[in-house]
Image 1 (spheres, rainbow, N blue to C red):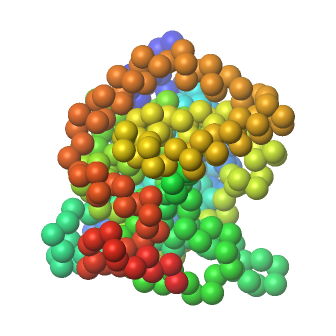
Image 2: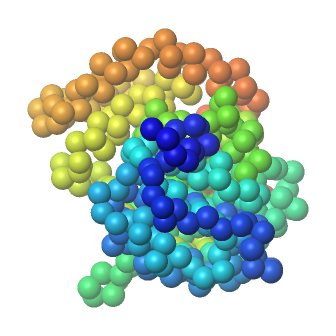
Length: 374
């Protein structure tokens, strides 16, 4: 097939309406940020998402939207609602490469020193970029650290009675090798109100430093495309941590996020999503678990593994091929692990403490700091 190709050499879906703008057209005073969106059947969410992007102050420097073979008119909707004067590109791909593959294309097509990964169902407040950038600048000035990412306070859309629930206030790890969005599903009562260092941030609305992403990339690949979708952000955060990049949580930066994929809705999720979710929980550990961590987390992780296996055998047999995929690709995955571990510069404690801490207040350093989960 002939036609334009993406950064990895794959053919982009032929479409005479591909929208390309010169990045030099960025508005004066724009934030040094590229906003990156990967879509798949998101036509209903895109108009309001792009409207909020247009309202950002200061505006972003560029916008890249990558559509992964949507069955609806997501690409056309993105073009129709593109924020005026915002430089960037609309790239329709011929196949669904998932969040990971789509984001790698978007990163390669953008150039700003910071990149905000944004889901189509996310609605950032007007000052979202400004507050995230200010948090990174302030902390780097006051502490001897490298900030690789900053995430904000994500909240769900208001309920019918006007009440609010949290969606994500940074990411945390558990000894069972689960990663959770902090506060997810809890009533918003003003908790988690202090800026903190956290394990990671969700790909739904996190600001990443490009230099950090390139430093953590393996053979030039930022998001591991074997993950396709689900847990790819947690895996990237582990690589950032292993390369001694810091991740911050800034509660003053607020973004509304509707969120479709939730553990409670697993039975109703597409079979492909559940398959990747199961596969990727093992990929995460295969790449990053050390022998010492294996020994002390084994009781927690093994129990979770048995629960997952029982669920799949009893209720979700469509996910069983995940185990076979892992076995068939074991040599490739172990080679990937060796490449990741060979580049690790952080001490075991710098990574291990995130299995025991939800967050660490800015200015504190050791394992004994308060978790500050209030």
